[in-house]
Image 1 (cartoon, rainbow, N blue to C red):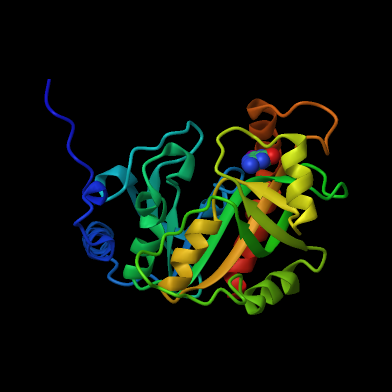
Image 2 (image 1 turned 45 degrees about the vertical axis):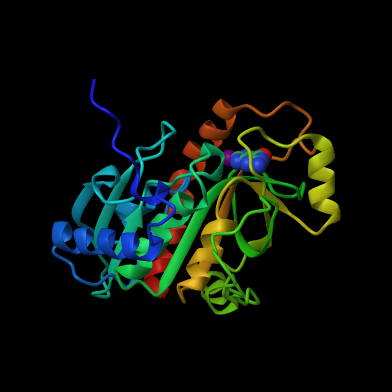
Length: 277
Ligand code: 8IG
């Protein structure tokens, strides 16, 4: 038996930005594209957007790139794709998310975002599947993230990095999204640690403090994207109403099923938004 290779981001002396820069140069080499303009992280329910936004010119298993981990969850694609958009811009599609609940530390959670920034991307589109607190949101509803409440009690920033998070989820980009679909609602995303879903009491807490969407990703990634100077568009697919809001218990299978049936519609929507950026 060989020793498992240590993960480069687990070395406390390693510089996560240097590792992201290394990952970006590997992506440039493997894709033949030395600069990407836009990056998209496609969460549950959003994966098909990759096929609709343009022509895929390279697909790389993410774990072959420095700093990326093997996917923990089935149904998460685990690839990095370089896509040529009709506009001539280049998009990097990240189908491999490391979740905070995997307990690999926040550096590994935000590595894909830092890598995207190091490839040159100045726009970061973060998508996820999430629970809805507003009863008017039926499963399958896409919503814009207007702001977030980070309930992980963690941060991707190290040391005294005081980063402004006003307009973290760009009102300009939300406006573009709404110009494509005027019916798009928006809400405040609460990132819980997970991987358990919330109790009904926790959902009521999230509602009381101003939350509308509950999830297990995105907020920490958005903070890292802002630190890297990117403009952020966040979108959630409401796959279920949050615990206690819906009358029946939550099941991962139902969440996956809701995501799959909404996927064609929301992927087409996202593709139209990307074309308008
Ligand atoms: I999909 O109801 C999905 N992800 N925290 N709560 C949290 N994450 C989720 C939920 C949910 N649904």
